[in-house]
Length: 152
Image 1 (tube, rainbow, N blue to C red):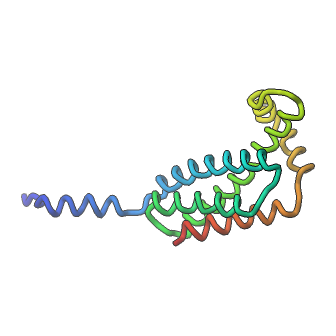
Image 2: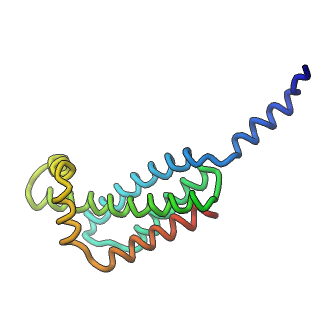
Image 3: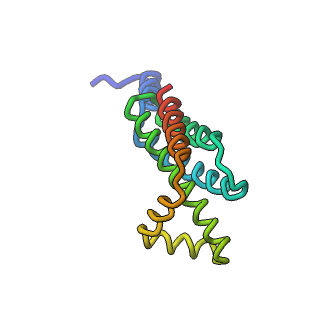
């Protein structure tokens, strides 16, 4: 039996480390999405204004995480990054709406958050009432940036 030499074994480990890992990319993208969503909600709450830079930043954050930690640039990674970017925008808006309701009702943020989480029909009503056509533009920008950055 021939045993592999040490340099060959190290090279094999290096090759394995460079292989794409969609699972690791999805985990990293999911964490980046959560961070971006919190930032989206906080910035929107603090300024009471949404700017396209938030969508660009969120998409870029997710895309970079998917690309760097997923070690790849596959079409699948791009699609997942786009979907995570969209989820981040929606979650960011959810956090903003939660904060706005909390402020207007004089209730603690977490109380409002838990009340909304257990009754999704209220969340749908809030999103429907607050919807503006610009929301679609921001969502599309975030998805495009997330997809593009993850693919590079």
